[in-house]
Each structure stands twice: as C-alpha cells, then as structure tokens.
Image (tube, rainbow, N blue to C red):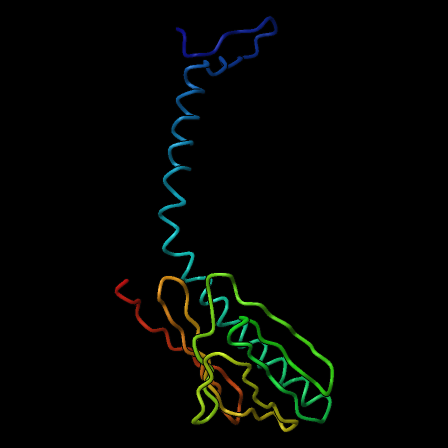
Length: 167
C-alpha cells in the first residue's frame, strides 16, 4: 500500500517531498492573502495613529507634572498647533519633544476660554502636582477627532472620541 511514504534501506519511512505544482499553488494563495490584507487594515490604521497621538500628548502632560514636582518649580507644556509637536519647558531647557504622526494634527488647544488654532499654546504644570486645565483636540486626515481634557487637580486625561466626518 502506497501512502506517500517509501521505505529506505534501513527501514525508516521517508515522506515524499512537495511537488513544484503544490508549492506554486501554496505561494499563489499566500500572495493573494497578502494582497488583500493591507486594504482591509487601512481603515483601522488611521484610528490607531490618532489614539497613539492622544496617548503621546497625555504622556507629555504627565511628564511635565512629574518634572514640576521633582524640580519644585512650574513646568510649561507647549503645543505647536501649526507644527504638530508638543514639548515641556523647565526654565530654559526643553524636554520630552513629541511630534505627531504625519496624518494627525492639532485642531485646537483650549486654555480656559481661549482657543488656539494656529500658534503655540502654553499651559502650566505646578510643583504641587496640579495642572492648568486645558483641552487638546486632535484630528486625522480621515476627519476623525479625539478630545483630551486634563483634570486640574489630578492631571488625569479623559478622552472623548468624536464620530467620523461624512467625507
């Protein structure tokens, strides 16, 4: 009975190798799957980049709170709305520079009643661990938005995901 194996001289069973046809069919199926996967993930990717950018902004604010408490002096969180970056300033030194992903931008930074859309906005982190309350709204190229609000006493961020635009 031939079940795809053959006996060797020492009685060990040896399996037949794949034929070139089987190998080509397998590679064609793998190639087809690889061609179909990236377009399916394209809609997920912008959403995750937006969320990652929001976490990055929150991490910058947390870094400023920690630095202000350790140094015993206020730290500034600066948001370059037009340039798409944020960083912390302690005295004259710049720390924790983060650039937003290319398809994510600051839409607004709200400090109290003042809304900044095109300049550099600055808010304070204080040595007692408090943070000047502010909101940062990020937007990606697909029109999705996420708003990050910072609690004055705890500095904790809250995230509010807005629905996609109709574009």
